[in-house]
Amino acid sequence: MASDPNVYFSTTLEKGLSILGLFDKDHSRRTLSEIARLAGINKTSTYRLVNTLVLLGFLSKNPRSKALRLGPKALLFGHTIIQGYELLHMVKPLIDEAHRLCNVTIDSTLVDGQTLLALYRREASSTLFFRQPLACEDLHARATGKAVLSRMDQGDLERYLAKAPYKKFTPNTIDQADILLQQIEEARNRGYSINNEEYFQGLICIGAPLINFQTKKVTGAISFDLPASEYTTESLISTYAGQVTKLANDISELVTMNES
Amino acid sequence: MASDPNVYFSTTLEKGLSILGLFDKDHSRRTLSEIARLAGINKTSTYRLVNTLVLLGFLSKNPRSKALRLGPKALLFGHTIIQGYELLHMVKPLIDEAHRLCNVTIDSTLVDGQTLLALYRREASSTLFFRQPLACEDLHARATGKAVLSRMDQGDLERYLAKAPYKKFTPNTIDQADILLQQIEEARNRGYSINNEEYFQGLICIGAPLINFQTKKVTGAISFDLPASEYTTESLISTYAGQVTKLANDISELVTMNES
DNA sequence: TAACACTGTTACTATTATAGTAACGAAGGA
DNA sequence: TCCTTCGTTACTATAATAGTAACAGTGTTA
View 1 (spheres, rainbow over the protein chains, first blue to last red):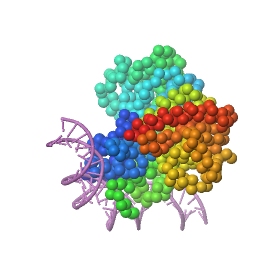
View 2 (cartoon, each protein chain N blue to C red):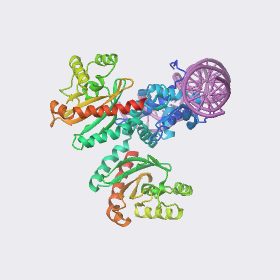
View 3 (cartoon, rainbow over the protein chains, first blue to last red):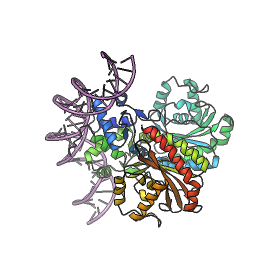
View 4 (cartoon, chains in turn red, blue, brown, yellow):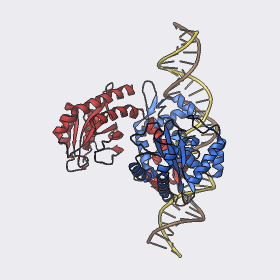
C-alpha cells in the first residue's frame, strides 16, 4: 500500500467515492471484479467497500447474478446533493427568466480545472435535442468552453492549448491551435464567444464567461444555443450578443456575492 | 471507538457519506463543528474526512470564514449518479408518454423501508407548484404512500400503522389508524388509492402501486396529481383510475424485468 | 481591556480497521 | 471434462484511524 504523506486524508473515503462514481448512464450495472480493476483496488478491499455501500443502500446487489447497481439511497443522495448546490438555486431563476424572455435554450457550465461541468440547462421547446455531457474536457469545441478559455490564467490557457490534438466532433470543429487562439482572443475582446456547429451539427451557440469580480477568476460560462438552420453567425451576434453578456454579467454578480 | 462486528464494513466510508449527505437544500453551508456534532464524529476525524472531501473537490472551503459547501465535483457526482440510476431511464419514457396523452402531473416514487423516495416527476403546465420532498416518511398522507401501504407485507404495514401519531398536513389529512386502514384495504381491493387534499391544499391525487411480479413485493408507486378545484373524488376515479392502474402495470413489468 | 467561548488546526499515540495474500466453492465457457 | 473467473472468507502485518490534548485565531461579552 502506498504511503500517503497526508495524515489528514482518508484514502478509504476516496476509494469508496470513486467506486460510487463508476456507475453512470452507460454503466448502470457492474461486477465486483470490474469495479476492483477500474478503481485499482484489490479485490478484498473492493469487496469490503462495495459491501458497505450495499448495506447502506447506495448499491444493490442481485442475489443470483451478484451484479451491482445503484440503490435507492444513491438516488436520494444524488438528488439531495444537487438540491444542496447553492449556486444552482441562485442561477436558476435568472436563466429561467431569460429563457422566458428570449425563448432560447440556455446552458450554464462551471469550470473545474480543465473541464466543464454541467450546471443548469433550460431547453427551448423547439431546440433539437442532444444529450448534454455532464463533464466535458473539450473546451475548444463549445461556446462555453471558448468563453472560459478567453478569461483563463495565461498559464492554464497555455496548458490547455498544448494538449492537442483537439477532438473533432464535426467538420466545423476547430482543430488548429492558431485559429483557436485567435478566436479566444476575439472572444476576450468582444466579451462573447461563438460556436458555429463545431460541437454538434445544426447547433450554433453564443457564449459568455462567468467571472468572480472579486478574484477576477473565471468560474464558468453560459451559452444560448440555437438552430443553425435559422441563424448565421452574424444574425446570432446581432440578436443575442447583448442579452448573453448581460445575463452572464448578472450571474457573475451572484457568483461573486456567493463566493465571498 | 465502538467495535463493529462486521469485518467487511467500512465505517470510514459510512461516515464520509453521512457528512456529504448533511448538505441539502436547506443546509448548503455548514461549519466543521456543526458537521462533527450532527454526524456524531469527533472533531479530528471529522476534520480528516472533511479535508479529504475538500481535496477531492466534493466540498469547497471558504478560505476566510472556513465555511463549507458542496463543490463542483459533488454536483457532477450527483448528476452522474442520477443518470446512472437505471430504473429512472426505464420509467421516464413511459411517464412522459402518459403525461403527453393525459396532460396531468405524474409522480413516481420508490419505497425504501418505510420511506418514499422521489423517482421521477413530470409536471403538467397548469398544475400548481409545490415543492416535492425527496424523501418522505408520511405514507398516510399521500396517494403513492397509501398505494404502497396497500401492498406491503403484513408485518411492515402493522409497523407503519403503529407509529402514530400521523403528521397532519391539512385539515383532510387522515390521522386515525382505523380510517387509514380502511382506505388502505379499499385501495388494495380496487387497485388504486386516493389522496383528497390530505397532503397539500388544492391537490387531489390518485395513485397505484408498482409491484415486482416475480417477488410479489411492492417497489414503489405512481400518482396522477390534479387540481382539487377541477375534480371530485368521483370524477377523478372515473376519469383516471383506468389509466393510472394501466401505467402502474406497465411500469411494474419493467421493474420486474429490471430486477431479475 | 481582558476574559471568555467559540472556532479550526495540529501533534501524538494506542488501537483498530484495513490491505493484501491465499484458499475455497460455485458458476460459466471452452 | 477441464479451466477460468466469479464472489466470498480466513488470516495477519501494517498502516490508517480515533481520540485526547493543546494551540492559535476570531468574535463576543463583560
